Image 1 (cartoon, rainbow, N blue to C red):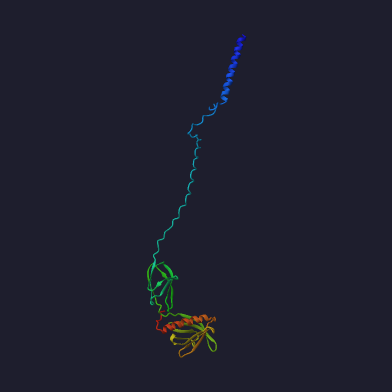
Image 2 (cartoon, rainbow, N blue to C red):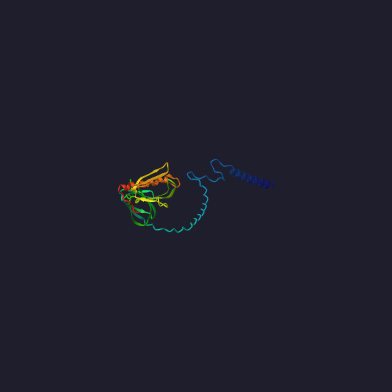
Length: 253
């Protein structure tokens, strides 16, 4: 009986010792051998696998383009027909300006002039220039200017000084002559420019004096004591009288 118990005890101790040895063998790795719980290392020349990238996020839907408001309907006007000016003068080579822009010298054809009102100036050395506003219409138009003709249309309100008192009236001059219009019948006169024996202005004294050939002498002043008006009137009459004396033709009035 005792012997059987000893055998059983011995067998239990042997089993326990074997179990402890197995546990120690697994816990302590042998040099050169991988540990039991360590995953095997990748083979030489083999890339270590990388974790897969996360799936791409879906791109946001594009914003809807703003709807442009409907364009306003624009009425296309047909191009206006332009005008053509044929300009000539009795003095060849006269300068022509339209709206202060030099266009050339006569005789001259100017194309492409916009319809409407335009300021036209024609001038030549030694002659009085002409200026007028013309209304251009589509199509051709001929214009002829007479610079060589004498033009004079001067008017001046004056006071005629008498020895005793004075009277008021108006001096009027044109290519046909000069006249004094007044309510005083004894002072009124009218003569050709060639019949002026004396004709002078005294700017400092503010007087205009003229003497009729073989007749009376008249001294005039300005009602507002303005010597400039006397000077301009005298200048215009003198210029016209000189040109008429040279044989220039009076302009039609």
